[in-house]
Image (cartoon, rainbow, N blue to C red):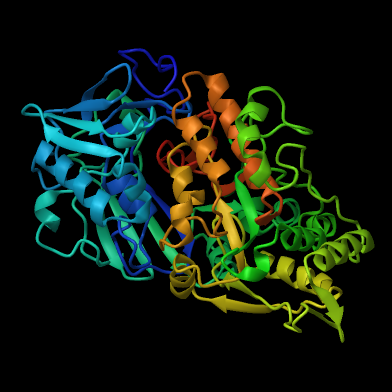
Length: 577
């Protein structure tokens, strides 16, 4: 995106991979919930996402998790674009093959891009709308031209999964299903027990074994994912030796509960892996499609009522830092106090429509060490009163006598970053505080399939929200926070925000010519999002806590993204006895 890649032509391996890592063995993971589809490229169904996207199918380019905005050739042996980035041309490697031995062709590339762009999940549609055309320009080359000025588009076009046209042509691609996909990746689907287990087997005939970008990667013979009903069952399976890796999300448990026999005997090792990536956003999101959340004063009141300090002390021993903005823990984060310089210049044209604090500066309430945060509740009551809500006969109501009621929707399987039990504890403490305001929410627990269906349709009032963010944010942010997601199902815009300022900042990011301009645009966007008061943020961990079988190892050099997709299991290996 800017400057040159860190690795020069002729590199032998990615810096965070051990080129001579031994091959062999198996690794077993635990996943919450279940699955009913092997098609993560469409909106329908509850698919196996990671394996089919990262192990079975490949893209033209490979993303380094040690360099923001840098891709290296995978299926493509070369890439070319003009200075204005109005088009990009890829040339396929002649040796690239699908797992059935058939070659990866330009026809497969064009079909994949057109099908994903028109029939695929909404995450593919936004960028495809900026494509003017796609055409074959040689036996192994394909050119994509754009109808919109957007410097990130050439990179995005390098990261779409390439599917085998002959497998899916003539079928309804939008339907979910358990048909095993044929990909060009290092693994194939070996066994499927729908909803319970899936195993991937390393393909000994994988065409890309000798590529420098693959040196030291894809080391396990088999990778298995077992699905469990809840986190307790998953952890017990790990304790018993039926699962090889456990990501511990609680610093308290990490410090106090890892004294069981397999840890004491040395069979299990505890590793802490740091990172320099943004915190992202995590917490309870308010759906502004519901009129009761449309007023920023109401949202701020609900943030004031969430006593973060007490909750963090209760659940995490107070050790985890709070998410103070969407890009905390990185140089992309908004700076404290009023906006200055280029950030202020970008936001000023939208000043009249921005929420208070976007330009002046916004900080979250501190909360109290005590369960009853009197100050926070007083501020909340005042804000609610200004917004037209007062306590009448013990219940918060508006002037028409309508009670302030909403539902908190939770996934009984938890999430990638929080077990269901911890979510429930947070919500229970929060509800007790809300009762002091005359608010009595209803809490609804759903299984994963029902939860995904309802959140895809935005059929909720408040729910748990997690959005991981990278050091190279771009077009995907329109899926997260673009106005189209207010009505179009399946976006990540769960809060239902419709902000011209946010979309303008994203546009600035996509066309920034220098890192400095890019950073200013992200910091300005961070202010719009944070001061929008859509999410009640909780804590984040700047490290990953991984308990794992002692025979499993990872390289000494940790990528800038740390424990991120592309790290485990890709560059790990097993020492065989």
